[in-house]
Amino acid sequence: FFEASNSGLEIFDAEGSKIYASNNSFATNPDDYELIKKNINGGSVHWYRDISSLKRKQRELEQTLLAQERIFNMCKSQEKVQQQVVDYELREKLYRELERILTCKKPLVNKYLNLLQVPSELAEAASSINRLNVLVCYLKKRCVLFLSGAENSVVEAGNIYLAMSESKKYMAYEELDCLFQFELKGSLPLKCGLLLYDFFEEFLEGYIINGGLDVVARAYETQDTYELSFVVDSFEPWMEPWLDYEKEYLNIDSEIKCKDLGYAFNLTLCLPKEEVKA
Image (cartoon, rainbow, N blue to C red; front, side, top):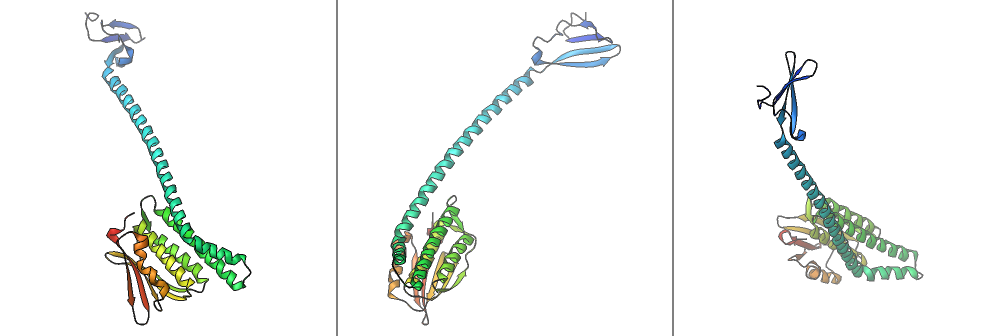
């Protein structure tokens, strides 16, 4: 009766010999069944539990994991390619920036180099070297600012302050006495930060070339604008082109404000926040 049943059981004595077995006690596919043993009086009973559905789920899970791994590897490869594209575009932008700056500064560089090649007074030679250092500093810090903000198109105000401070330090060797107030905080759009530094360096460089000695500079922001202001003794003819600075260089709806304070002259670059986009 037991052997004819379909209970799927096997009974073993204490020595491990099989005593009884039902007609379906053997697993047709051992991989799809799990052997279960339970001790009973005088021996043990064995039966097989069908785990084919669990095995199937496991195989499906393994296939899913393999598919996800392939997708992950593809995404990594895609990210690598995208990063290479970003790096290439970044280098191209940097090269264009360098080319533009070098083209702009080349006349001054050549002028100072030529002065060093002819016999001159020690003071004149030292002045040429100092001004070359100003240009080199500007080129270096301009690249640092550009690279620091190239990925997300923003630049930290602290980096702008460091760039302006270092340029100011080298300009001091040309006896420029600049009282510098920096009140910007947080992050600025990259384009805005670069324009502020460009204006700072180029205006003070022109101020030195034209014999200026004392100036007050202030970088700050209002609710609607980022501003860089210079206060000098008086308005000079060489400053006239600066009134159209934003039209020539900025390509945004900026403004140069001029004001005669009576005791001094104020010139301020205003960059509207909503218009400055990288």
